[in-house]
Image 1 (cartoon, helix red, strand yellow):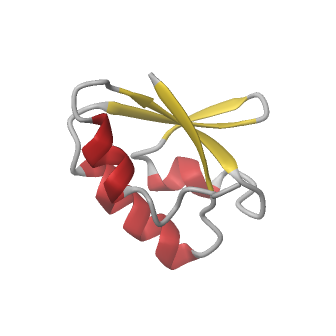
Image 2 (cartoon, rainbow, N blue to C red):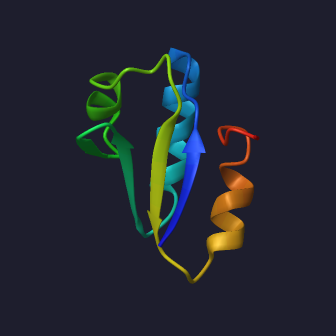
Amino acid sequence: MTTVKILLDSIDKVKSFVNDVTAFDCDFDLISGRYVIDAKSIMGIFSLDLSKSIDLSIHSEDNIDEVLKTLDQYIVKD
């Protein structure tokens, strides 16, 4: 499992993000405080505070490089 911080600060970013993660055949969880949301659920994402970065847990090791490359535009660079 790999965890990265992402930022989804607009409606268009959320839509695009859900389309991107849905293309992969593995599980993704968004963790914000005590809430854990399925990252493929657009309604679940909108229940989170999107003004702050969110932890994304990727439950796959097989094609992690491809997943991270696809999701690079959402990842918060420190």
